[in-house]
Image (cartoon, rainbow, N blue to C red):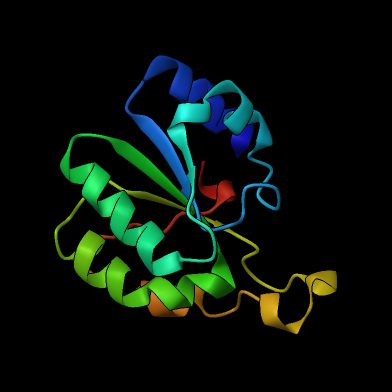
Length: 130
């Protein structure tokens, strides 16, 4: 994902990445190195990350919210109200979706499709949907 984001960001300066303490786990170090002013690690603050992405989208930015599936649950209200209901151009790059084995029980991302699929103005795609 990071390589693709870097390529896109080279072509469009409006692309920014927001991560709630998942930069290393999501392999975004390369993006951070190349675009240090366009990657925002907000710490363990998933709700803030989603609302920040929404705010940036209202200003014609193209935010990518990089978030682990299991921790996206913390930002569910913000995804509904701040992103989907306003039909904002935010890409949510979900990491650790599905069964993740060695990452442990708290990192099993098995609910994301279930809780996102009923939201308005959202498209759910997987890498296979290229």
